[in-house]
Picture 1 (spheres, one colour):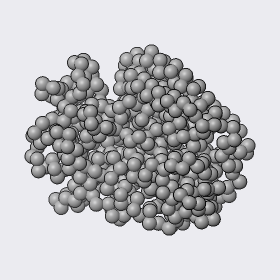
Picture 2 (cartoon, one colour):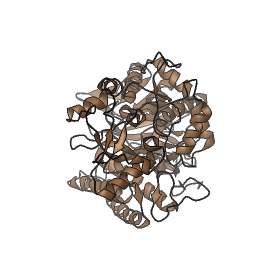
Picture 3 (cartoon, rainbow, N blue to C red):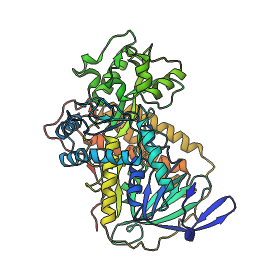
Picture 4 (cartoon, one colour):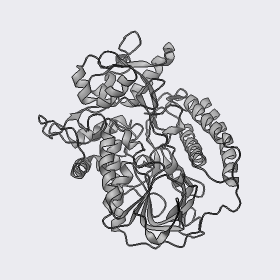
Length: 549
């Protein structure tokens, strides 16, 4: 789909678009909550393009079930939300960033309400909306739309983006790499746009922009088991690193404790809110095991719950554990968790009568490209927001439902920063050069490498780590790097190749960061370094040539 296309840049031929150079004020790569929110906040004053790898609603934001954390009730406070975030983050949250996000929470929710998002109401609550509680939160502060908040939010704002005359939407386009001053031989390493592959036609277009926002989500697909969609391949993080951006805290991969365990349920998440409303984790014999691991039991932060489940499964040789909320009335479950209720029932699991089989799965990338409070990266005119970015909010473990809040707050901050800047001037950009490559006759190499990467990352760089396992993973990543580099240099690019290239780089950054942390903290647990160091510091990696004029 190519909506609202600028006529001057496109020549229409039968059944295809052939593009030379598209020019915009702002290019947004990614169509999740962060990207769409930024687009809407910019579009009244700027010409904006959004490119997305698949359809507009296929990202991780649409899958968010629980909701958005914000201080909305009279018995809650900013100080409590900040403290809950700092506690979950295990000493690594940036206090300034945390305060900034929390203090802008109500403003972000008010904006969504103004857009028409149908949050679940509760006349008995002083906020007017039903607020739930999730692990790590001291109060009920999660505003939601039943158990499908992400989809409700995304559908609402996507409709507005599609209707806006200043927003051009390019679906089924995958960014290949950013075009920077360094690549053009200029002394100032600013970002000027990207090359993008139309995954349907195979055409590669050049998109020039005064400002570029990376909002591509995380890198969950680097793992064999994940709650993330197929689009979560670390594209923005990898492109930003290659462009000259630092990354931070990539070792902190959040494993959601409760992913539905069923052969016909791919990546289906059982919301944190199920535990918040009284769900109990049990062994196959019905034993309630969480109190053995933490006095907060099911309401402990996600890293603790995930490690507890992992421990019990490995100790007892279990395929899964069980989340039981059958003590609640069926009417309550159908009202509060209609999506989960229906999905489980379709698979033969009546959650009002029987427990839900669950396992941990990779869920959220807490690290990413280093940004400031305006979403600015180390490269001029390049911003990163949402899961792609490291803002300092999440520390060593993300507090439940803070992620969508971060998307909203930093989308607004980046948009304001761009609107305050003088109009830029993009230099002439060269076309993509395919003169020295051929079609590949060995696509099987990509699928084999993809499978190998995801399996050894799960085995060696999972919930519990050792230095030896990390070193094994690092060695295999290096071999994959070499194969993929050769493949990329000699053959026409495909969407699968681009995603694999970005995944391998993301995996490398995760392993490098994990090896650099000689302690256990939050989501990073090492058997070789089981204790936490007295001083908590982020892991910051700089790409080759960083800081060189």
